[in-house]
Length: 215
Image (cartoon, rainbow, N blue to C red; front, side, top):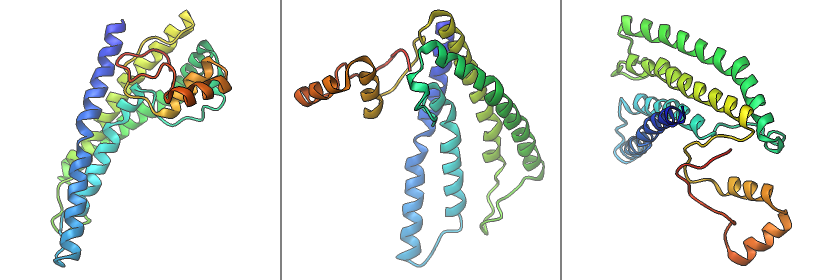
């Protein structure tokens, strides 16, 4: 089971990190558009369409990756103080009540949104060249499927945590400094932690993990 869960984590990671390179293309498009617009007074007819499609692609295709890393924004000022089992119950209820209904609605409406665009061979109305946009809209149901798979993984992790009292292992990337400090502060006295950080210059137990556990 753990191998399957981590396998879906790796799929979400592969998709998210692959499409993350679109930020470089987006940056190049924006720089080129600004340069030719203000230096040569010759704005492109495709820059706006390409920019919003690249940004939308980057934003959507990173969704499952962020979920696999527990990276979506949450109001956790109470949640982070809960014991793992209570966190798992909290997450499980919210996944059932809100996440899965929203994802199914997203996938179904997104599919019909794409299908209508494909049948019409829809083109953008925002520029004279009018590039086709149905491939961009096809990403909506694809993203919904990826989020559904990753959501199922997270539900299984909730059930495992409820049973064992500890969060199971998950893939992780380099953590933000704030997350490392919060994790260290939960394990020792904040004043002692501050003195140790001042003395050593780093956070105790600091790591850039491959397969870290917990949240």
